Image 1 (cartoon, one colour):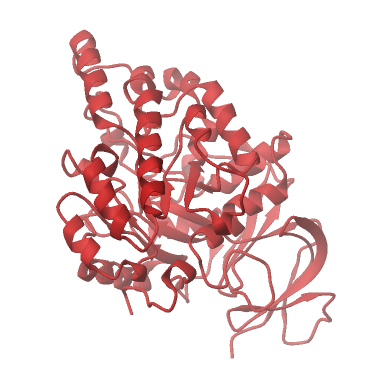
Image 2 (cartoon, one colour; image 1 turned 60 degrees about the horizontal axis):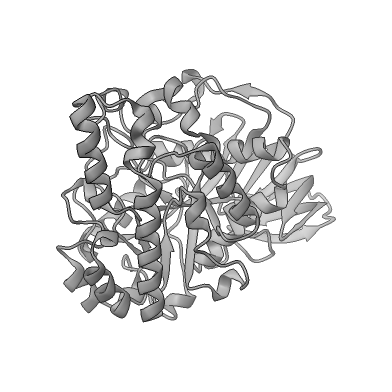
Length: 457
């Protein structure tokens, strides 16, 4: 029988409330919440003065396994995630090969079962080449389908650029459709204009002008209109503009929404003011935009037009980043520090702890219909993170766990620290020490998928 763990006297942050109580973990689950008597065989963790959150669920990461493992892999990046309090993730399909078939998806689940320290799920990729095969499938077996990152393979893979393909998918898909929303024709016209002026060496500060507000807004508006026409389940990935936030609702519960969206942490943390300092290190697609956009995104997060927080964690080697504009790879690692960033906003009085938990724990579980995750409830999986809100530390190469070994946050001092992380009732991270005897589990899900099983079963 596995060891029973008792977390004593922590301040639990859950379902809009903060209160002091004990939590007993056993057999992967939260067995009891309340005033619990210590027994001789319990492993006791003193949570006095600490805050206990549900484990963070990151709904969009690129952990690079298989095929791009020189950047990161399911072991290294899940280890970084665990150190950041992230206990579950959904990984995107732009690996090598792109995950475009059920067979490739099953192989990816098999890899994760042997390597991932966190719980895992995976999007099936959908693009112009496989869309006809996808709509013939029982798509309810997938947690979602996505085109994100597949435009790197070749032009024409963004669904937002092809209304006909979107209509076909929206009319036939029975899972969440998560899309990268930019109009490539607008981006390409901007690229041409700036290339004529600067050649290949376009300064990074022009990235949000090239990948413009107009390109994002027009793509998102069209996608939403088509999704509503077909009553499809659409999720817009990594929203970047204040203008786009006006396209989303906050007058119905998340459980009833068919059109949802997210913000990635870096679009809340950085703005165009940071390009002169960090250059290509903060080149993401869609681009980090203005201070006004950053403020507008936070406002929409707080008033529930934006539903969840993700990282879009996308590691590249420094060599791949430190190239000229067109050669520099888009994306950067963030998963180890996403909760720290949000807790910094809390320290600044910009967001409550309860709202952070809602957007990083509860809502991802609701949006993706995850079974018994995302909440501190008896009978739910014991995915938890214990946080010290008064522990100052600075990001440096010596404490980074990413395989790529760099971060755009290097030199940043945080006021809070993740002390312990529990996955399925197992203490896997404890103040810098890892316990890797048990891997994470495949995330079970339902609702949109009713009685169906995932593709790996």
